[in-house]
Structures are given as structure tokens and as C-alpha cells.
Amino acid sequence: MKELSLNLENLNDVFPSTFTPEQIAKAKTIFLKQLAEEAHHFYQGKIQTIPKAPVVGFNWFNVWYTPGVSRVSTNIRDNNDASFDLTNRGNLVAVVSDSTRVLGDGDCTPSGGLGVMEGKAFLMKYLGGVDAVALCIDSKGKDGKNDPEKIIEFVKMCQPSFGAVNLEDISQPNCYRVLDVLREECDIPVWHDDAQGTACVTLAGVINALKLAGKNIGDVRFVLNGAGASNTTIARLLITDGADPAKMIMFDTKGSLHVGREDIKADPRFYRKWELCEKTNPGRVPTIEEAMKNADVLISLSTPGPDVIKRPWIKSMAGKSIVFCCANPVPEIYPYAAKEEGAYIVATGRGDFPNQVNNSIGFPGILKGALMVRAKKITDTMAIAAAHSLADYAEKRGITVENIVPNMEEAAVFPHEAADVAMQAIKDGVARINMTWEEAFQKAKKDIEHARGLTRSLMDKGFIESPPAEMIQKALAYAIDQVK
Image (cartoon, rainbow, N blue to C red; front, side):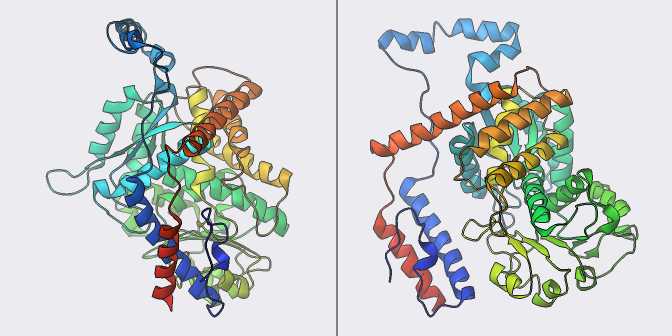
């Protein structure tokens, strides 16, 4: 077996030459899960709290704590907005989840979501220079059912400590009400990354994919498979950015969405889905097989695959078709299979395939931009501005059919995105403070470089250990053995 490097960059080259593309894809999934389990055991999580102020001498404890800090408390008492300047609140995000829909694993119990929420905090810090705290909560009421009102109350109660709130992995239909109520009733941005974040990055990918295919967003036919928080928000942003809803067909587990879906109309909790029933699929096309014929774009965020999307459906699509299959951890159809059936551009949610359409290039920059101008909310137009920022950045550095959006390694994209979002917040009238694009860009760039430099310094000095090579090889051997 070939040796796998510590940075995992040669992951595609270490599997037996006898493995088929499907076996390699399956082995990579098993390997990443196994390594994640062992690495999390080794590090006991991936986030810690460290001071940002110095301890020059013993008496500085009296400055950072009592009695000196009393002045800070009374200043904030007299002007609550001073908390953004005198504490870390202005750069601090709460990552809030009830863990009822964690990735593709469903309800994982409240603490079961901690790994994902810590991961979110990890990416916010390293990619966006933003501090974050994972807060997984029990939202069950006395009847044992998950109650959206408990999440709403929790966020309202803790908002004085944070500059923004990132909602995550809350199942539908609760996710709709939680976001919509908190966006309007909180004084800080409340953002649902599974909805607005996924929609933003997906829109960025669609923008550049259409450029390469030579197609206009208002002319193409869209099929959206899955009607959860992500895809319903994707549909909304696509329409806002120019897609024709009459050329869009969406599917949930019971069939296509249209004005004849009385089951959706009768349940007020699914008001977001009903809005799309009223706007899309005027011909009431009933099946995905029929909808896929001559469709230009497929966006699927549904059940993890690999056979959820069938090969013949891809083959029936229009020329230069665009396929986004973003279920995690396994896409609804593997990229190689979609390509074999004629897809022109294929994107997934995974970083080990080309064209990763993942929230990780969206939320760090978006939240940083909102925090810098102390925005009161993150509007849909801010999310669309971020999508165009990502697409424009990628286009300027060059795009291909296998490279349509930036990736997490392109550090320079995040301050650009943050500055564009900050300017849109000012334009939308939701910013508390003003700054120029250049000021926003330089501040974001400085904070991101600081976060990355801090991590590198901790690694260089041994305060963060390197992952043991034998741990990586053991996980690889396990994956190969499981697939043989």
C-alpha cells in the first residue's frame, strides 16, 4: 500500500490499481469517516479558548478582571453598543443547533451535533478570522417533540453575548420559522447556513457553470431534487437573481411541487414550500424522469446516494448539462457516472471531487462582512452579493469545467467576499457603522492572516501536535480492507 502524506493531498493515488472508480469513491468515504473518528479521539475536539490580551505582570489580572473591569461593565450598562468595542462580542458568533438534521445522519441528539458545530467554529476562525462557540441545545418540549419556540427563546436570551448567530442542522419545518422570526426580532444577524449559506455558494457555482456552458440564467430549465431548507432557499435566490420560476420544477419525497399540492397548502408550517408551489412548475410535471428531459441544470440536495439520481435521467438532459449533486457524505450520483452520461459540469459537496460546492467558502466571509459593519441582519441580497463575489473572484483567476468556484485554500477570496458583503449591508440599510470597501477588505485580511498565523505558530511550537502518520495509514488500510 502506498504511503499517504500527512496533508492527504495524494489521497486519490493510494488505492489499489484494481479498484474501480466507484470502489475508490466508496473507499475515500470510509477512510475520511474512520480518520475523523480517530483524529477527534486524538485531539479531543478541534477548538480551544486562548487569551487575546497579554499578561505582562501579576497586576494585569486586576486590569483584565476585578477591580478594573468594573469600569467596562458600567460603560456597557450605559451604552450596550459599547460591548462591541470593549469585549470580543463584535467578532463572536454562536453556532446554534438542536442537531435534528446533522448532515445526512438525521437526528443525532443535541450533543451529537457538537462535532459539526465545532467544525463550523474551526472554519470560521481559520478562514474568516471570526471566533465562534458551538451551542447544541435540547429543543424538545414536554410532549417530546422538537419545539421551534424553544430555539427562538434560547437565541433571544443569549444574543447580548454575540455579534451574530449561525443556525445549523435544524430540521424542517422548524428551521423556517426559527430563521424568519429571529431575523426580524433579533438585533444581530441570525443566519441559517444550511439555507442561505448553501444557497449562496450554489448560486455562485451556477453563475460560473452557466458562463462556461454559454447559457443565460433566465432561459435555462432547472430541476431541484429535494425541498428542504437548502433547496427551497436555493430556489428563492435563483429566482431573485434572474431564474424563471416557470422553468423550474422542484421535488420533495412525495413528488413535484405545484399548486395542486394540497398537503403542503394545508400545513402552515411549510409556508416556504407553498410559496414555491405557487411560483414553479405551472405545467404540474409529475415525475423527475419527465422533468429531467431537456433540463439544463439539476440541483440535488436530498438522500445520500450513489443511486438516488439515475444515469438515464442525466442522459436525457439538454446539451452541456450542469449537475449539482451535493448530498453528504455521498453524492446522489458519483461525478464519474454523471460525466459518462453526458454531463458537462458536475459539482458535489465533497472536497475530494472537483467543483466542491460547500458552505465553507461562504459563511466565513459573509459573517465577517456582517460583523465588521455590525449588521442587524443578513439579507438575501447580501447572500446574493456574496455569490457574485465568489463567482467573480473565480472568473478573474480562471474557471474551467472542473474548477468553477474558489476553494478553501484560496485565502484571498475571503476578505474580498467579506468586503463585498459589508458594502451590500450598508446599501441595504442594515449596517450600524460605515466603512469603505478598502477599509473592510484590509480589516478582514488582517484578521484572517492573524488567525492563520496563530494556528501555524501553535503548530510550529508543538502546542498543536501533528497527526500521527500511523493513525492515517491505519485508517487507510481499514478503508481498503472494507472495500475489497
